[in-house]
Length: 153
Image (cartoon, rainbow, N blue to C red; front, side):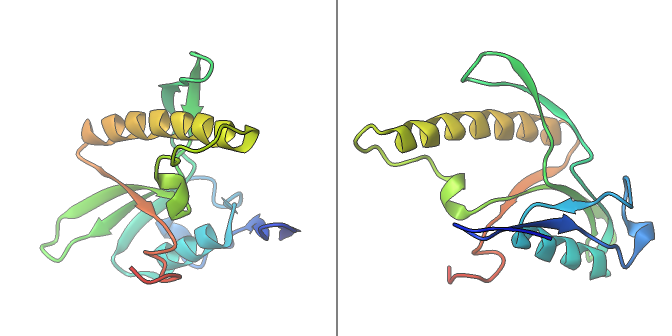
């Protein structure tokens, strides 16, 4: 696990408990935050989860910053068994709530311009992901600190 001060950034290798549920490289599952690790653990242990994968799908998108084609690797894809016996597949992005919302206009600064550029790239990625999911009958969702129970709704 790597720890970086100023925001406490955690990263490490996730060790599977239920190897048969994971679709992808089972010995190279990297979480990039404690939030991702928490979601991985939930997916690994939850009996309603049929299978899951992390960063195993590449979705092409055009960046509004440089106008070039890039690849977006969503955090997670998971299949859930619904109560009626059908399957629901969800592509999941784990992000702080603030990063899922457009930056509020304010005095232009380097930080603000970086936030605006990041927002533009992220919205291009998420639009491509939604189109990718819709074409397959999947859902696209965010998991933030709210869904993780770290703050009240």
